[in-house]
Amino acid sequence: MAKCWVEWNKDADNNDYWICRKYMMGFKVKHPAHADRCYIATCPGRTSKPEIHLPEPRPLIIKIEEPRVVEEPRVCAAHNCDKPVAAHKQNHCSEACRRRANRYAYKQRQKTKKVDISPKTPAE
Image (cartoon, rainbow, N blue to C red; front, side, top):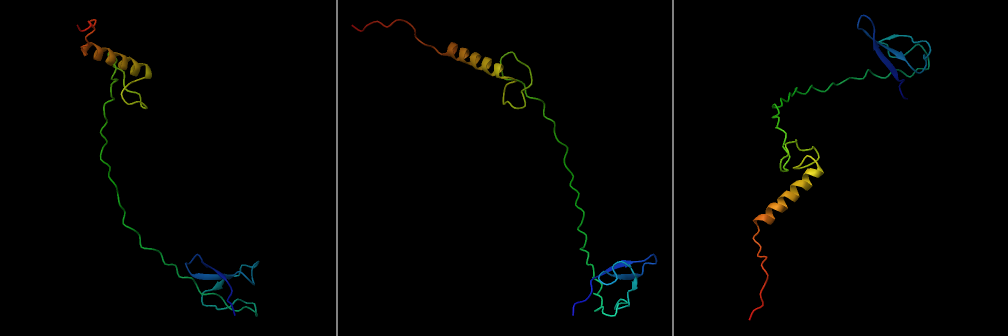
C-alpha cells in the first residue's frame, strides 16, 4: 500500500515535524518526527523524510581582465581632411571624402602617367 505524502518542516526549537497532507488537510496538525502515522485510523503511514544532498560548492574563479588599450581615432585618408573616420567606414569620414580622395588619386595617376599625345605620322 502506498504511503501518505507528508510535508516536513522544523519548529522554533529546530525540531523536525511533519504534516499529513492527505487526511488532515484542513487541520494542519503537527506530528513529531518519530510518529509513523497520523491520527486517522485508515492512514497507511507517512513517507520517510527526504535526504537533501547539496552539491559541493565549486571553487570561485575570478577573471582579471587586462586594461584595454585605447586606440587613437583614425584620421580620414582624403587629401586635406583631418576628421576622424566614421565608425561604419574603413578609411574616410564620409562618402563625399571617399569620392574626393578617389578623384585626387586619379588626377595624381594621370600626372605621373607619361602618355605620348603627339599626332601619329603615317609611315612612309
